[in-house]
Image 1: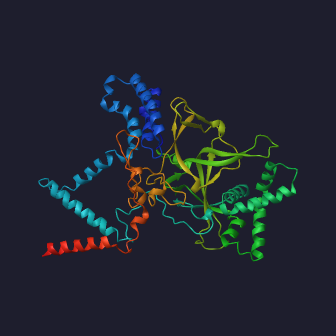
Image 2: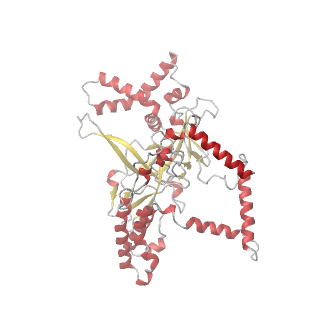
Image 3: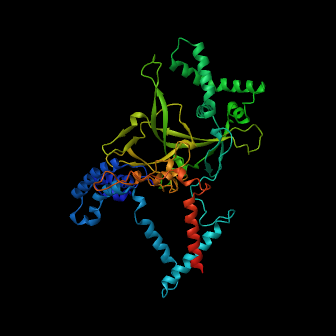
Length: 487
């Protein structure tokens, strides 16, 4: 999707109307959002009313029918009833179209629908037992990553799936060191070694600030880490695994270069290939945690998340295999080489959109990210200023944000321990039998009989206790009545 509006339409429509249509698109994305709150929906009512007023100033009165007027009530309805996707009619209308396709004999449409539905259900039931055969219901998506996570270091666990023909490229020494350093600093298992080296340098350079010591550590850490891991391995340290040795010795100077990579449900292409296509897949976004200092002598860094927008230039697959070793070890990392927009090339407009200018690029030596960190964005040219582009982030298809509880389990597996208010409650919970929890005491006219004892968990257990004399007599009477009914 290169642009939200075709070029011919943008030339006909006035520039303010194009901005209003972009605002209208953003409103519908908010209405269909999965993480919106009641307060955000109430704030959206004002934006919808203002957008409709702008449309009334630009379009003829015949355009405004009951459908356009319905926009004013959508945010209020979403604040009351919840997200739109749980109650709209689009799934039902699509399913009615599926049922109509079952009709082969128009004289008996109901019978055709029944036979077609039963045949579809029978095939769906059979496909559950055909795990090795690809069916229409088990077919993966176009941008599905079929690679399985690898055991070992986290940096080697997931790298995405590169598509197309690979080209062997010999990296320059400076670029190779940049790739090696970025992979080391983004591996979780390397963090203890970074802290250890930082503590050693702080003892050696006592007069230097924290910022100066960090720069010194980042510069010489790859060499120190390689020597340190090799020494531990020579001493027979069991904590040094084969993956850690490969990571410490660095990747090969010869890497594989690709033009397309599928990762996180998105298809990424390099900028040179995208220039020859009508759609756009080279936009990259990443949110990184950085540390900043207020002055040179400051020893207390301020950490925070910084958003980076850029375009993809190259895709490198770094191989950590030994010389002459055949493929199959799995120690590979896919890196994205990008052109990043500097801070002066980012701004926020009055409508809340993020605009970037690719004439203001950040010229630094840190241009790489791992493929698993990339989030895809689309850049739409601003009709007011052609040098600026609106960054639009979209969620990948077939991906769902499932809430997780504190213990790591998803809300689908344990609804009661999550914050998902739309989850189905567990009806077997004894706490739901509490009448004080189920009766609205704040409404006039309601009454709760607190003299009656509420059921507790112990009342449901004790089935093996002995019966009293009255209980035995009651059971005898019931057995006699049942015998009389049988006779």
